[in-house]
Length: 340
Image (cartoon, rainbow, N blue to C red):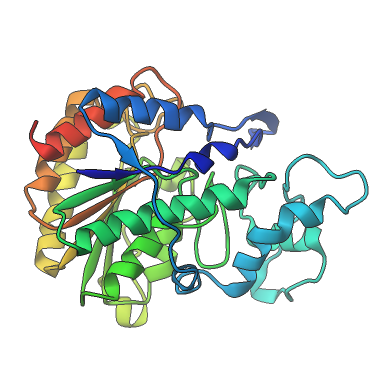
C-alpha cells in the first residue's frame, strides 16, 4: 500500500483549546504523526512525500473567501494591537441574519466554528500539505492501486465549505472525494471517527453523486453536538444520500462493528466506484477524547470488513489522539485491511 505523509505537517503545533471554560492544551499535536508513523513502520509500510496538488481542487470544495482567510489570517493577525500567538475567535455571528464583515477579528468568528482549531504561523502550510497527501492517495487509487493511505495533519472532517472547527482547517477527505468524482460517477465516504463528520456532511448534503455515511458517538452529549442525528438524510437532490449511525456513549466492539456492517450494506446498495474512508482512531477505549470503547482487535476486524467490500479505497487519517495505543490501532486497522 502506498502511504503519503508531508514533513511540513509537523509545523502545525496548535496550543490553544477551550474546554469546559478552561484553557487547555490542544490535542492535535505533532506527536500524533510520530505515533502514527510508528504504526505504519511496525507493519513494514513507508511513506512518501506527496506532490503539490492543483489549487483548483481546494476551491472545488471550499469557498474562495474561506481559503483566503486561512492563508492570510495569521500574518494579518500580527498587525492587531497586542496580538496573541494564534488566531482564536472571541465572537461568532448568527449567520442567518449576518453580513460578512471586513474586520479580521470578526472574520475569525465567521470562519472558525469553535476555539479548538487555532491558526498558527505554519497552519496554512501544514493543512495545504495534508490536502496534498489525500489527493496523492486518491490519485494512486485512480491509477490502479487497490488502496492508498494519507496521514493528514491537521485532520479535516469538521470543516465545511466555509468554516473550520474541531482541530480541522481544510477538509482533505472531501477534497479527495471531489477529485475522485472527476473520474467516476459515484463516490462513497465512510467516516468511522468517534465524532460526527459534520463538515464533510455539510459539503455533500445536497448532492446525490457522493454518499456520506458516518458512525460516531451520539451527538446528544458529544462533539459536535448539533449534527449527526439519524434523521439527517440529505436535502434536495441529496435526500437519502446521507446516513448517520449514532451510537450510545461507551459502545464497544460488538455494537460498533455491527454499525460498520450496516454502513457497508448501505454503501453496497449505492454501488459506488470509489470509497473514501475517513479513518478516525479516536473510537478506541483508551483515547483521551473517549466517546466509544472500541478495542485494538476491533479496529483489525473493521479493517478486514471494509477491505471485503472490494472497493478502490482512499484512506484519509482523521482523529486518534495521544495514547500509547495509537500506533497499535493504526497497525491493527491496516493489517486487517491488508490481511497481513
